Length: 214
Image 1 (spheres, helix red, strand yellow):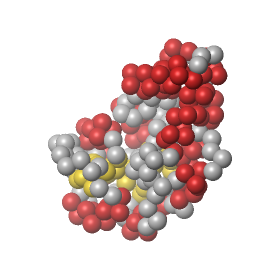
Image 2 (cartoon, rainbow, N blue to C red; image 1 turned 90 degrees about the vertical axis):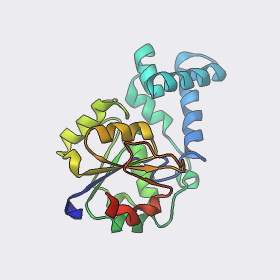
Image 3 (cartoon, rainbow, N blue to C red; image 1 turned 180 degrees about the vertical axis):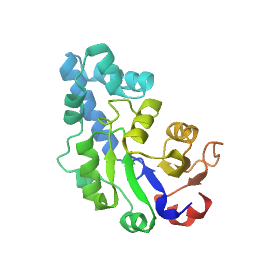
Image 4 (cartoon, helix red, strand yellow; image 1 turned 135 degrees about the horizontal axis):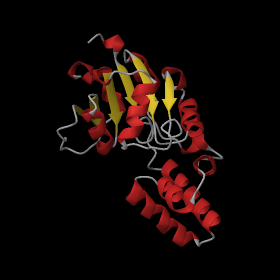
């Protein structure tokens, strides 16, 4: 395959940047506050419900939509606000150079809302590296690993799965990508590599050295 014809599909949180240390805790607190205010329950009850819906449906939002009629855009806007996003971000300073060295198109495919994903990419200085951001809104709120979101992205962006390489920290998401015919790159420190993962890397900075294996 001509390297220039490849399409790199990147997850955002905990792939292009390290969301777990600061960004995720902030979002979790915002979601808890939102649920408490909207449903008129205590913070402890709201936190428990947030986690329960996340485990049951893969996203707190889906549980709120199903059981409480929550308007998804209202929820996503109010739970992804940051007074100091740049102060919370943790990412590799060499990321922009790494992305520039990868031949082919680059897309962000994220379960996060568009305004947040775009803000993160701007703060990291890598927004120009990507052709588009395929956010949760564009999947019609069918988040990864739901197959429907993947299929909508492939169809809408006119992508051939055989030309796509998905880079993710989530093995569940990569399983779907592989089943659809994509190559899969797992960003993980776990030593055991599932059969549906083509290449495992420990850092996003390792991408250039593994291109020949894809």
